[in-house]
Length: 248
Image (cartoon, rainbow, N blue to C red; front, side, top):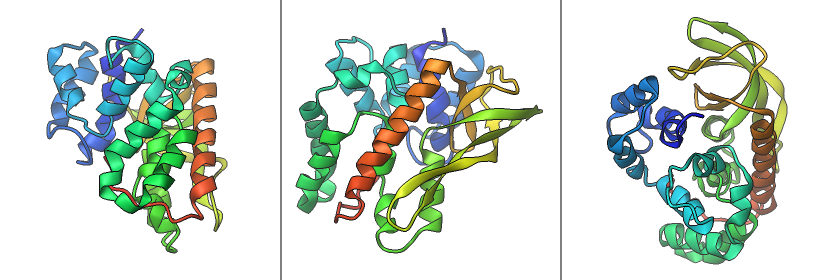
């Protein structure tokens, strides 16, 4: 089994390389991924992802795991698993309100309602906290949808592999005019994380333009489930004046 810190790094690297979050040292993160070994230095780097680390800490504490980088905790946040159901709704709501309402204090009630229905999954953050969602309500569509689709953890089936680049068929996000939805599978080109074996027919997880992991049947089912449930949460509130929050 791949160590939890390495799995974390695979998913965290793409936005870090783009300068969106985490420490200013994506090359070091990439070296850890390529080596496939974790040490205290990688743990310290993970703690500097101030958007992701609090979610991992919350899941670990709520499910009595001593390590936020425990493999099951990391999987819960990025892909989804039963640990998410072990985080009490009121605890998650308090966590979200405490972290984000200072940036939109007039919308504490709306944010709390979102969190009470949501789960501590990366795609909840993308669909319900990420600032681009608010732009959809103001008629801006193309760029927000593109970024939301790239930032969510998405799944697909590998069509072909060519020199570190992979063509993957997977559903893409689109805006119906009133809601976010997933379309039919379409091809997308992504790069493969170092030290990760991928073959045609594999079901994989992607983040931005990066193939992060090969998914088991269980993991693929969980990612589909938590993507759709967190989309439902966002869509129930998109017509309401939920705050445009800054990415944490």
